[in-house]
Structure formats: C-alpha cells, structure tokens
Amino acid sequence: MKIDFVSDVVCPWCAIGLQSLQQALSRVPELAVELHFQPFELNPQMGPQGQDIEEHLHEKYGSSPEQLQASREAIRQRGADLGFRFDMASRARIYNTFDAHRLLHWAGLQSAAQQLALKQRLLADYFTEGRNPSDREVLLEAAVAAGLDRAGAAKVLDSDAHAQDIRAAQDFYRSHGINGVPAVIINERHLIQGGQPPEVFEQALRKLMNAPDAA
Image 1: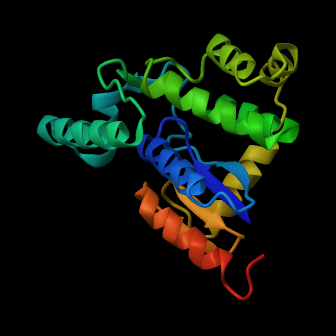
Image 2 (image 1 turned 30 degrees about the vertical axis):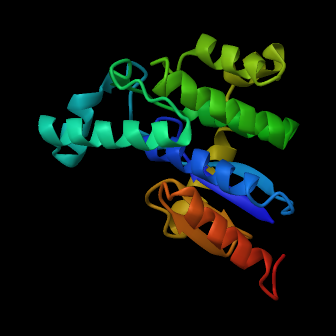
C-alpha cells in the first residue's frame, strides 16, 4: 500500500496526523506500506526572517488572543494524548519551509526510513524545541540525526537542488484540490484529510487492505 503524506513541518495538525497514522500502522503490522512525504508550504511567501506566530495567525485567520490560546491548548492536549510534546511557549515565530522540503525530498531519494526520521526530527525541532526549520545548521543537524550524510545534505542546501521537484509536486497537489494539510492519500485514490485520530486511520487502512481492488 502506498501512502502519500502531504504536509508542512510548521503545521501542528500535520504532527498530530503523523503520530496518529504511525499508531494506526502499528496496529496493522501485516500491512506492507510505502510511506512518502510530499511537500505543502503553508506560507510560501514567508520571508527568511519569519514572523511572530500570533501576528501571523491574526493576519491570516483573524484569530483573537483568546481563540489562539484555546487552539494552542487543544493542540497541546491532542499531541500529549499521542505522545508528541508541543511546547507552545517556545514556538514564538513561524518560518519559511522551502529548504526543509528540498531536504526531505533528497532524504526520500536515499531511503523511506531516513525520510521518515528526518520528518519526525524537523517536527520535533520546531514544535518541541522551538528551532528554526529554515536555518541551515538546524537542517544539517536534523539530517545527521536522521542518519543522512552531512556533506550530501549541505550540497543540497547550498544549491537549488530539487527546487523544481518541490514546486512541481505542490502544483500537482493543489491542482488536485489539496488546499489544506495534512492530506493522506492512499494508493493515489483515497483521501483522508486532517489530523484524524488513530482509529480513523486504522479503520481506513483495514478497509482498503481488504478491498477487492487493493493495490
């Protein structure tokens, strides 16, 4: 079964969705899965310096301080329930993620396991540690932690490698109606939208695994 996980590394519901999906997959050990991470920039026009997170969310969604606080607490609790720690106080800014997506694409060319490890590290770097996912050193440290070659990662970041791949992939998913993430696409046909609970993913996986036309 092929699963394309379309997401961004500064999207809290993507972190929740990935944790949920991973738990669901652990409940269906007989299922062989190819997991691929696909790019989706929430803020493609974001400058390199980033932006204050509260200012950004107010501008983008019109959220009041009270709404932001309620949303933060809901996200923190969902994460805690799944074993992912959101340190909302450390996440003071939001950043451009284009280089993170280029590095993830390169990691996927090395191995699916290393791409997953890099994705998990980048999510934890931002949401738990409050680190900047557009910072070159942060990205290189994440690559090494994921078992990737530092020199190879540096070569990607110091060039425009895979830039066209990222733009083409984002255009593809947007042209197919993906305007919010996470979007989990199974066998290129079945879409599960949002940071669903593990039970929702498990039910879908079992249903599709047993379908007559399962690929």
